[in-house]
Image (cartoon, rainbow, N blue to C red; front, side, top):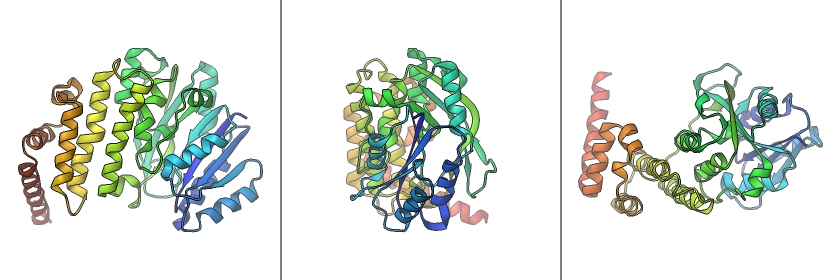
Amino acid sequence: MKLSIIVPVYNMAAEKKLEYCLDSLVAQTVSDYEIIAVDDCSTDESWEILKSYERRFPGKFHALHLEENKHQGGAKNAGLKAAQGDWIGFIDSDDWITPDMYERLIGRAEETGADLVGCDYCLTSEHSMKAGQVVHNNRSSQTGILDDEKRRSLILDGGSLVVKIFRRSMILEHELWFPEHIFYEDNALGNSYLVLAAHFEYIEEPLYFYYQHESSTVHTISEKRCEDRCEAGRLMLKEAERHDFLDKYRPELEYSFTLLFYVNTLFTYMAGVRRTKYRFVKKLGEEMRCLFPEFQKNPYYLERTHAEEKKLIRMQMKSTLWFMAYYKLLWAYRNFRKKMKR
């Protein structure tokens, strides 16, 4: 079989989100493929919808059900274990794709000998095939046979896994199983999926539609999700060590870890969690300082981090209490100014 498309599903029945996704998959023009939709112990009608698609598309559509909620990582692992295709594609169950996306990705792989092929996506808030804001996932300079320079670039700017296909043999050979029971599983494994490939190709065109809505993981902030992002950062380092590329690409991994574990977590926590805890913020800074004490001297950090963020981070590194007080005052002041301008 040529391709296995793995779809983790959890409570996506409302507003026909799940059906819109699945309809785009059963309409794919690529030949000889299977869809493996894994229900992650949904509490709505998602499982019934999956079973109906399995009845309508026998042999092409396979519905699996997990008895325990394991988050997307667990659902992806179940799909990988069942997959028979030479190529693997992942898609989020509230997104959708153009009819020829996988045919074009696999076609590029067969033309070039690549074992990793990606494309762009567009952001949209409506269920349609009208392209929204285009997000360029990669660059042409990253393509071809992967050398150290290209791998460093992919660690820094690898883009999303859901807009790429991967040789299943590479995944199995390196045992690239996703962490379970946490969010941000792609962040934990993303570098391994990219760095361990030999040849990357890229179609600079949005073939994937990324649906923006309030219940998306990226729009839902809680202390649990912040903790999961931290754990994804720790696992990212463990993966790099397991596959023996931590020392080789240390500056790039240090910056990626800093962004994932510390910077993004710190500011989303402060802005999005209603009752912030001193203990959480203090521990975050202490662990960052312990793992990478010189992270503020990292060349990518110096180049890519906004000046105001650098200022706030220096403040948090010196005094968590002062940082939290200053941040809350700053946030209140900016909200006040917004109200006054209305």
